[in-house]
Image (cartoon, rainbow, N blue to C red; front, side):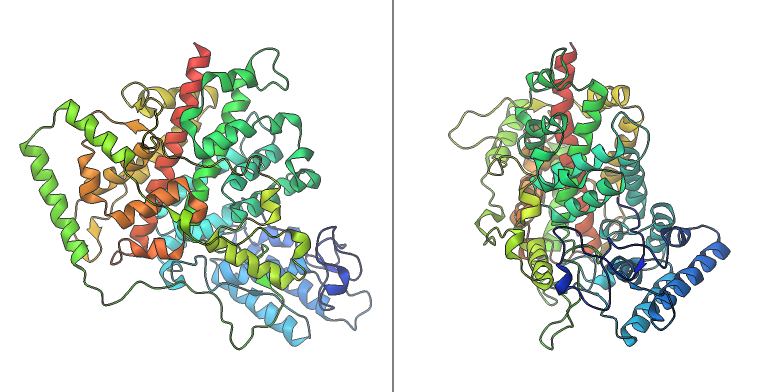
Length: 576
């Protein structure tokens, strides 16, 4: 995750190439490329101090710097930069420390009263699907967000939504930090660029922007972000694995590994470098599913998250749609009854292995529609986006419609290569991966831990937490054992990716997962960029949003493990 942008205060200068032309910028603020004359990144970094006194001093220093910038009559004073204003906007919207959040609001209000055009957030909360009041709660959720802010310098929308499940968020942040920041075979800016390449496969402008910022902060060359052709050949050589991991991981073979790591390969990857790269790609691909599946809005300081235009009378910040409030809750009672009956049935009768295989094949080949039939906005290049306001609105539409802007498309090779059903009707499908032949517990975990020390342990902990996570409740019912439902979700996703567990009765999937839930899960796991609010709100209509987020986490982690199993199996075969 990208760390804090520096807050600056300037008097003169031009915008960066490709930015908003100088003539269109507000006279009340300056671009982020101009020289520093006020609040410094050092004072902003000190806002994350664990020492209350130092944090208060940093807050006063920031305030004085901003107020000095606003004192235009003083000799040598400058004006607030765009970057400073966006930083204040982000703090005012997402900082979990009340004193910092309130001071940022106050400073923005003061700047506006002094005639400065200040930015405003385009969305009312982190998600276009989930009401902000469901996300921004106190208690354990707030505690883990404060820890995230003190450790990372910012709290993004991903963390805010994941904080509905604090135990999982802690593990997720630890794993992501190890992947992106800790010692490893790949340089830090390469890690972010690989994540950018991976996120672009699913048209995820949210993650593309986030990791582009991290890439530049780590010293990456800006030209690489203008197109894959500007990146080093070694990074470009990952494109085949990137598209297969994102859309059809079962097609990955040892030949793909050999082409990258064998002696004489040009450019050549070491096995340690390659395993780091593929885990980064698989992590970003699965995180795209979470971003789209939860309808995450752009960050308030990212393109599409803010505007300098005043609100119109007919416009209010985007707020999520709500589920019907008075609809019959029979579906919950039916699911509860099915879970009990299924458990009794499995205790009383035992399926033959042949019947288990038949049920798996039936589930795998079932025709479940996704969002492919929904309207998609046409591609619009950045040269056509004449105003910043239009660019912001376009990005907000992309959040729920999957319309990839030019900054995403220019980072994708073969954009027409997408997910296809593992076993299309009437066609010969690839062999099923049987978990008893290659599993995470017996094979993938140890190989990954050997090639990328500690990463196998971190991922295993994350898988265990999401699989075992339960609050013993379901919708309005308490004291419920949801194990069978969670297992059905996990195994259904692996089924979509052609992975079969010999000891699992796939008839349970049809019993426990209603069709609308299957549509959501398949869209999110296989075509995440096509997820819409309609698909999100159509399943589990009487469940809590936190329960739907839990389902999103299961889909994300099951998809990640499935992709890793295929790539690790190919590496295992290469090493034999």
